[in-house]
Image 1: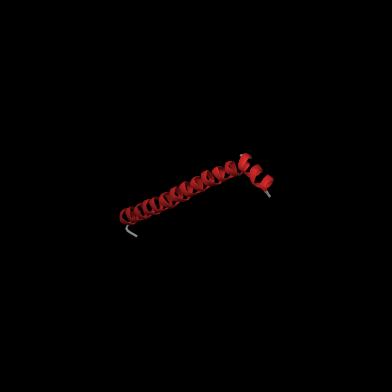
Image 2 (image 1 turned 60 degrees about the vertical axis):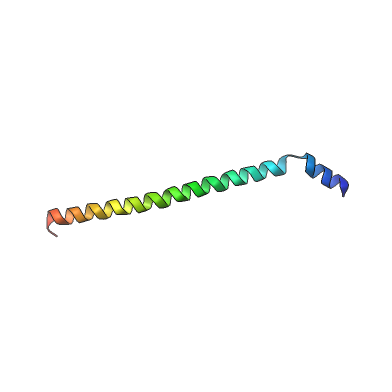
Length: 59
């Protein structure tokens, strides 16, 4: 049991995997936040364009 604990303390694979998982989570959160923000702005832009076209075309 002591050998197992000693090996886990010495090996660096575990902390490296955790660091990569944290970086991946941060990247995913940034991408999802950007997509949500851009989708709202794009929808508002299309709504504004449709309103302006309706006014010009008299529909």
